[in-house]
Image 1 (cartoon, rainbow, N blue to C red):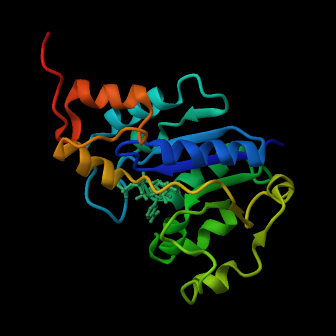
Image 2 (image 1 turned 180 degrees about the vertical axis):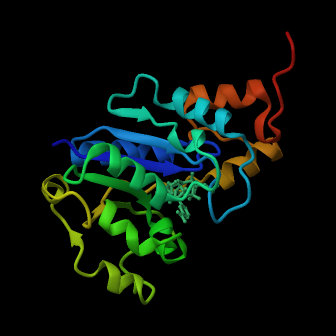
Length: 219
Ligand SMILES: Nc1ncnc2c1ncn2[C@@H]1O[C@H](COP(=O)(O)OP(=O)(O)OP(=O)(O)O)[C@@H](O)[C@H]1O
Ligand SMILES: O=C(O)c1ccc[n+]([C@@H]2O[C@H](COP(=O)([O-])O)[C@@H](O)[C@H]2O)c1
């Protein structure tokens, strides 16, 4: 059975760092990546752009990119977008034996113990962790997290295909220092975001004047 890999994020906005890890995961695991904008993301201030707008930017970013698709389910659900609820819903649809995985950046993994019912996640899905500058996976992990992960690490993508849930795979992709926070700050300051955004997303942001970006002057 093919691995169902979900990449959840606020995507406020989606940027080239997101696309790089989605493509790296697709290639390493030979599967489709389902990008899932969070409707009401837990543990952070409300996004600058609404859910429909963030999903529109994801759709523009992945247009023509093989193996990346948009999943809107968290935008259609009322209430906080807890990952454990999303994975339980997917597990119900896919069945108990289907391999299911959730893709996160290293900073998200380090914060995992603050997630809603985080220990239940391992029974529902595998975790795929992308390295991120500033979030060391080689350093000592917080107590509790290290213990929860210690027997789950694998280097073999095949383990994520042959088991339904519970393994953790580290993705060794080229590092990208891009963040949505830095992009929003640059847009608001009128500074360049060249190379950080997919061109169609950059054009959409300018056209809509999102994040304080100046709309282009009329001809
Ligand atoms: N450059 C990157 N390298 C690796 N992982 C990343 C990168 N950017 C984002 N991620 C991961 O992608 C997921 C979604 O990220 P998110 O949409 O919050 O982007 P962000 O750039 O971290 O945004 P913000 O700066 O607003 O927090 C998270 O798990 C995050 O760790
Ligand atoms: O379920 C939780 O408690 C939880 C806490 C923090 C983050 N998440 C999810 O992790 C993904 C990345 O979150 P963020 O804030 O880095 O964009 C996104 O899909 C969030 O909904 C989930």
